[in-house]
Amino acid sequence: MPSISSIFSADGLLADAIEGFLPRQAQTDMAEAVQQALNNQHSLIVEAGTGTGKTFAYLAPALVSKGKAIISTGTKNLQEQLYHRDLPVIKKALASNRKTALLKGRANYLCLHRLGQHGGNSTLVEKEVLGQLSTVRAWANTTKTGDVGELKTLPEDAKVLPLVTSTVDNCLGRECPDYEDCYLVKARRKALDADIIVVNHHLFFADMALKDTGFGELIPEADAIIFDEAHQIPEIASDYFGESLSSRQIQDLAKDINLLYRTVLKDADQLDKAADKCRLLAADLRLLFADTPARGNWQEALQREEVRSQTDRLADALGVLHEVARLHIGRDKDLDNLYERVVQARERLDALRDDQQQGVSLWYETTPRHIVLHLTPLSIAAKFRRFVSEPPRGWVFTSATLMVDGGFEHFQRRMGLEDAKTLGLDSPFDYQQQAMLCVPRYLPEPNSFEMREWLYTVSRRLIAASRGRCFLLFTSHAMLRDIAARLSQSVDNPLLVQGTTTKQALLSEYLAREDAVLLGTGAFWEGVDVRGSDLVCVMIDKLPFASPDDPLLQARIEDVRKKGANPFSAIQIPQAVITLKQGAGRLIRDSADKGVLVICDNRLVTKPYASTFLGSLPDMRRTRSLEEVESFLATID
Image (tube, rainbow, N blue to C red; front, side, top):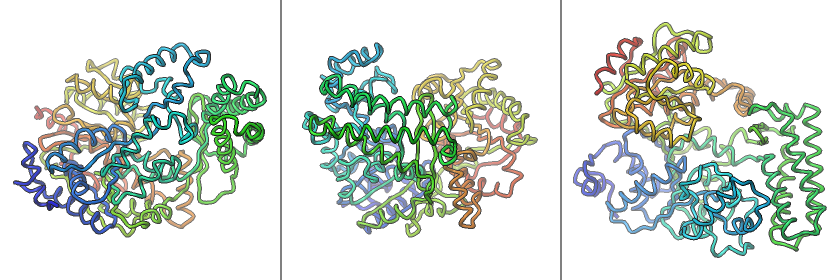
C-alpha cells in the first residue's frame, strides 16, 4: 500500500500523472489525518480552506485502504463531478483497480412498472405529458442505466417524471413483476459490489433513518464513511430523523387508487370514493392557509378551530379508506402496497396531530398548491452519536466552512461528535495580495428604508468598476427582485437573475458572456466554482442571519433558552458565520485569482459579535472606502 508521502510529494504518483501538480503541505496533512482515521476507526472533522485540494486528500486514502468506503456529497451535481471527473484521475494516478459506483436516490431512475401502468391509459394524463411520455418511451428502449438525468431534452421539473419513477411509497420491491430488470435494483447491486460508492447526503440519511430500505444493506457493510460539504449535514439529518406528510402524498395515493380502480379492480367503487374523499379533504386543508407560499408553526395552527376540525376530518377519512382497502387485500400486489401507504399516512398524521410532544418542532410549509406538515427533532446529537459509535469504523467530516471563531464546538455539539479529532487547515492562497474586504462607510441600518437606495448605488458602482463579472448575493428574494428591477433600467450589462431559469443555465450563460452580472440568493452562496477573471467581485447585502420567523429556528431558540444558554450566540451567530463563509468562498478559487468582497452591513463595525464574523473570514486586506475598491478592481486584468 503506497504511503501518503509517495502519493503527494513533488516526485510522487500524483505529480507523475497530473500535469502542473504541486505538493501542498495542507493537502498532505489532511490525507495523513484521513488515513489515520480510516486505519484506527475513529472520527475526524477537517476544515480545509479553499485551494487545499481536499477531494484528493480523502479519495487517495480511501482508495489505498482495504475496506469499502461510502463517500457522500452535498448535491447531485457534486456527486457527478466527483464520480466522473475526480475519481478517474486519482484512480489512474494510483493505478488502482478498485471498483467504484455512483448511486442516486430512487427518483432518478426509470420505473418500468410505472411506465407500463401508463401504457394505454391516456385519459389520465394531460396533453403536455403525453408528448413527454413518448420521449421517455423512446429513450427507455436504448438506456443502459435508466438514469433520467440522461433525458437532456426534458426540463428538470417535467410533469412526466413522477409518473415514470417510483417513490418509497409506491415501489413494490421484490413483489414487482419487473424486479429483475429494475434499474434501481441494478444500481444498488453494482454499489453492493463496489469498493467506493459515491452517494449524496439526502440518500445517505434517508437510508440511515430507514425510510428507503433496500440500500440499507450498504451502510452496514462500509468500513469508512466520508462526508464532503459536511456543513450541510445537521439540517439534512434533522429532516430525516423526523416525520412529514404532505397533501401531495395523499393526492398521489388517491390517484394511484383511481388508476387501479379503472384498470384492475373495476368493482371496488367504495375504494375509489373513499380515496376521492381523502384527496378533497387534503386539498381543502391547504385552502385554510394564505395563497402565498410560507412556513409556520403547526402547533399554533392547530389552535385554530377550522384547522383542527379539518385535520380531524382528514384523519377520519383516512380511517375509512384504511377499512375499505383492508377488504381487498390479496387481490392485487399494487393494492397491497397502497394499503401499506394508507396505514403509514394515518400513523404520520396521528403523530402530527399530537401537539403535546416535547423535544420536537411541529411546523408546516405551503407551496402554491400543497401543504407539508413536519415533525423535526430539535437535537439529533444523541441519535447520531450512537450511530457513529456502533459498529467501529472510520468517519470523516470535511468542508471549507465548519469552524466558527477558530473552533469546531458548534458543529461537534450539533452532531454529537464531541470525541472526534479535529484539524483546521488554512487556504494556501495569499489573501493579503489577492483579495480585499470592504465594509463601506456611512451605511444605514440593515433593515432601514434607505438601505435599498444604498444597495442600488453600491451595486451600480461595483458593476461599472468590475465591468460586469460580479455576483450580487442577497439574503431575501424581495431585495433581489427590487435591485434587479432598478438595475435593469440603468445598466447595459446582461443581468442574470435567480429564478428566471435553472441554476445551471444561469451559470453557463454567466460564463459565456464576459460582462454579465449574476444576482442570486441562497442557491448561489455555495457549490458554485467560477475561476479566474470571470468573477472579480462579490457583494453581499447583509449578514445572513436565518429568518427569525422560521418556525424550526424559533423552536430551537426556545429550547436553548430553557436550558439557560444564550440562543443568539449558541445558534444564530454560528449559523450565520458558516453561511457568510460560504458566500465569501465564491471569490478566490485559485492561486492566480484576484477580487473584492463587499459586505454592506454596518454591524460588522458596530456590534461586539463582529469580531467572530471577521475572525472566521480569510485574512484579506481591509478597507472602508469604495474608491479604494474601485482602484483595486481597475488593476485586475
